[in-house]
Length: 268
Ligand SMILES: Nc1ncnc2c1ncn2[C@@H]1O[C@H](COP(=O)(O)OP(=O)(O)OP(=O)(O)O)[C@@H](O)[C@H]1O
Ligand SMILES: [Mg+2]
Image (cartoon, rainbow, N blue to C red):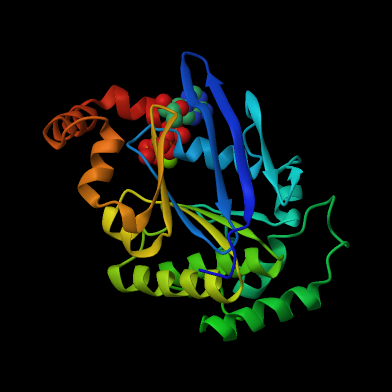
């Protein structure tokens, strides 16, 4: 982790109501510069909602986010320009366009077009790619790239716009083991060498333990704890996630898996 303990991002008393649900309930924690921060919790715990509030895709019911000392406002595009980027599982890439076109396209909207120096942006993208050893081809259509390369295009796109915080929601779900390892190497390098902060959502305990500096656990929308990764272990963390012993956890999981209505609500 990079050289300081400075916070770059602070969630302050964030709450989000949906009809009949409190998706996020009075959640407060901070992310440091250069940190890889894990966000864990069972299905429906509120992880994606919290990231969507960060990105500006979903408005909070109450609370605020402080970014670099200022209250964070604006739509997702405006927040991206400020340095907050989301890399979604679906990625939002145009598959028939090249990586280079995607890197540029990701930053063009009718509002912002013309404000961005494309040459500078590509230069930044290339220098970061060189530095961290990303070598996907910029000039071929993205559909020719592997799953991890697509993910990296999305990350490089974020970096080319001077992202300071990159949030990844389940980034490895479409990746092979090797691809995931490669992604982790690059995330690590970017946190160490570029001082970028990452918020990493994953269901895979092994991944979270491998890559994060700290971990926050959400349960039913509430923050249970924020711990240094080295001060906890998978069993303790699982117990915090489910709020009880492992045996009960397994039953709870089975219940939610066997319950299609529950799944529908989560996906909806
Ligand atoms: N658009 C929505 N409308 C209504 N309820 C929603 C909406 N989005 C999320 N929820 C509810 O908010 C709660 C938190 O959902 P969220 O998707 O943030 O959980 P999650 O931790 O990302 O879960 P998962 O691990 O399954 O991705 C759930 O109860 C979910 O059903
Ligand atoms: Mg989610």
